[in-house]
Length: 102
Image (cartoon, rainbow, N blue to C red):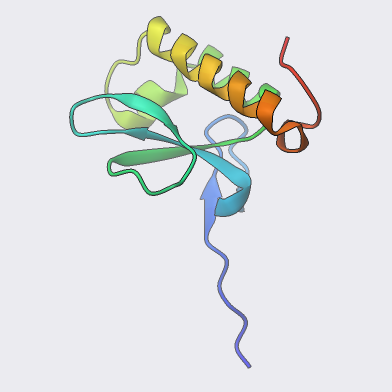
């Protein structure tokens, strides 16, 4: 019996390839709106980041989304993403390794 192929994606923070289900998706819609996509089904161009505070901070400090989305991503957008990420990790402590980012 054939084994099912596991979709792999690269984290924009650490550049490691990991299974798609282990990463968080960030999406840019046609209207230019950028947000975290927890379902993985929103329309738009996607970028993936580990559900780890360290990778998330590397992504922000390196302004990696500007390159991935081929558009300028401002500080306010990164702050909104950080807020969404922190709410997610507080709600699901197991993914972030246990707790609040700080």
